[in-house]
Length: 362
Image 1 (cartoon, helix red, strand yellow):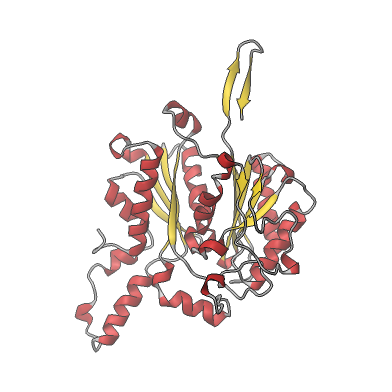
Image 2 (spheres, rainbow, N blue to C red):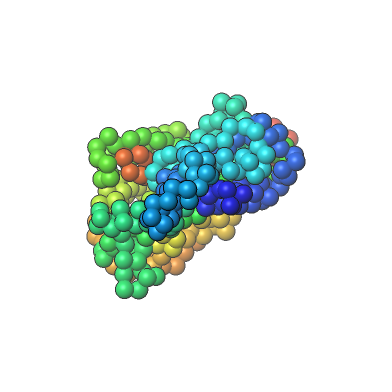
């Protein structure tokens, strides 16, 4: 498939197959027309188009060199469609374009399709091939938003007073989603349960974030999860490393979580850069182990925390040892798209005959 397909498609195929293997399900066991593929993306087709244009430029605009695979490579649904072709899945397979909120929204959409009984199993998450395109680097550079440092390992430094922009990365993270009763019936290893979510829009600017809409998004997700701010153990910040983006998000988080004792704050992009449409899904995957090891991972060490980004219980240095029951993950994107996803630790229900009621096993 690689010679006909795309870089993002290759990442998607790998992640989908690994997710299915990890779930304990076999491809043969799937009811393929009741399986959906929902992948969040920031952009798609840029890599293929730029490569084709480069070939034209280098060969005196000889259009005969333009690949006849160009159109299927560049349609927006290509990453999900390539997974469908590779795995023979005949249910719905499409992408959700939601800028840098897309990783969260792919998961949210997969959950909604299960709730609507459109599918019985969803492969959901986000994917990005951003490092393969010149345009995204040039675009961020022209915005003054491309991160840099004399030491490349320090170029991505969200919340630091010296931060100067985004470090573009790529990758993918895909989860197997199913209804709880189905997972229990087959004895699945349950990493967590989706407890709440929300998606909204700023309607303010093409790139500048809006604190009030972010506050609304977080509060709406908490309401859907039927929990308070103090119930949240981890808030994983979107924290891209831009000045305004980090400032605005930290202001929103301070207003909601600034007075609570239980909640700890971390961010992931200092380690992995900004994987655009895959970011939310990758960062959730990075925090889920906290449910089992009861450790909250630190930000990549921030040498000088910006006073505007100084947050109570910011994990900066050693991991924090703590029992974790709820993780809240922010993902925000261009054109003002905001997403918040809350995942809770699965606790097994045990029926106690003596008390004649249901209890929860921690």
